[in-house]
Image 1: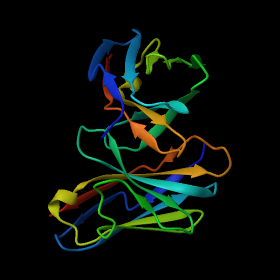
Image 2: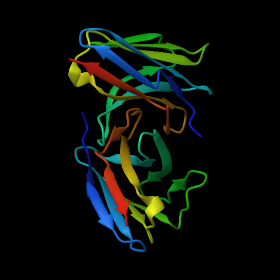
Image 3: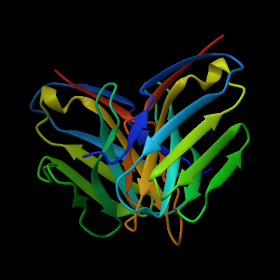
Length: 116
Length: 110
């Protein structure tokens, strides 16, 4: 199946700093990428939908100025958590969908963010 | 808010037994997918069933879909210790966004 990578896999930062997470589709072109957040022992919550070359669409309650998303190419989307605070500590997972009638989302391995 | 609810929340069985997980959703869908997640890891796609399908098989997996009841089930036959993981259903509408269920934590005891 298709492979999606995320970098970094784990990051620890001080409160107030910004953290960038990369999501790459390695062997296919992803017209759409999704960003999810997962708190411990909970399900995935969709944060935003990222389409290549256009602005991301954010879910209700997700601050677009805090979670900056850039989908600059068909294989790369980035999520930047700006001025991170301890409550932003979570597991961030991206997924990618290919073009055409592709229905399956392929998930990255996730990034564990801990804000001290 | 999450659309899907799964039950049971947790399931513990012996190796070799079958495991059944159920998922219910609220709105109309294009397809329903099941994913598996090992602790602290990403999701692995297991199977997709379209809204016009009622049953689908893949190896030891069997998925059913009842659109009239807005429910789906995932059956894992002859379970193995390596099947221990969290299992999520996810529904997809016209926008290809996935809405995840609350998940079932499956523990298969050796």
